[in-house]
Amino acid sequence: MPAVLGLEGSANKVGVGVVRDGAVLANPRRTYVTPPGTGFLPGDTARHHRAVILDLLQEALTEAGLTSQEIDCVAYTKGPGMGAPLVSVAVVARTVAQLWNKPLLGVNHCIGHIEMGRLITGATSPTVLYVSGGNTQVIAYSERRYRIFGETIDIAVGNCLDRFARVLKISNDPSPGYNIEQMAKRGKKLVELPYTVKGMDVSFSGILSFIEDAAQRMLATGECTPEDLCFSLQETVFAMLVEITERAMAHCGSQEALIVGGVGCNLRLQEMMETMCQERGARLFATDERFCIDNGAMIAQAGWEMFRAGHRTPLSDSGITQRYRTDEVEVTWRD
Image (cartoon, rainbow, N blue to C red; front, top):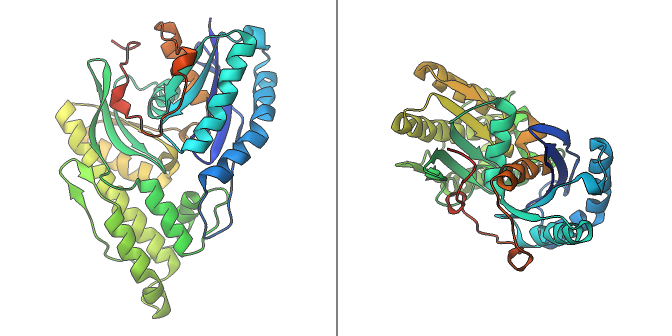
């Protein structure tokens, strides 16, 4: 019964999780929150992670009721993500693995999300919509790879929402996307925005530029409210995501859809995906903010699968990479 420790810190969340044989024993997390109207810079984010990660490590072991001797493997996020935060967590993972004399595993962040979603929901072979601040992909498993059927050709959907939140000076606590979701519930007018689907891919930079340029003018003239803009942006970008996911499901003959990533917490996105799935006679699987948002347990779970399949990361190869595509990893732990 291997127990795997997972460390995640690819963006503004840092977490340490412990997973043993499909059970999440601990999953504490901290978030670096910046003032309204601002984003988070790599250096500042890394300093935040370094300040809290040792406390998180001890908290995770205490919550799991395990000692360092009872941990069988240390997994960490190898990439993709922001360079400085990734490095700050990887250094801790390497140090801990050597101090405890445990094997080390570098995990693809995107695959961590997928394996966590599969574990928590019980989905067997779903078409995956992976939506976060740094990534937007539609993925399906085939022949030892998580194949990317469609993706953003510029910025991620979460980045689009976050940057619009800065225009309206929306709070980053607990997250700009969550606060946009709450404001969108009070929106009453649908403002027409650019809708950009290119085959199986999507583009969000144009819609962001349009709404950034139009927002202050429309608000000043009373054409709409901030809530209307949040509502309109959500409806448009989520419709684009539902469209490409449905197309991938049709291509794969899939009867399951799984939403993962931080934006996957959004209940309106889940509602729109549920409608599409019902019309196709398919099932939708999603998780809540405990597992959608970046967390250490998802890295531990992917590490657990890799560990059992015989994967190990030698110390000489235990660096990080900001670009690490989902389909680069050979998935030896699935049929």
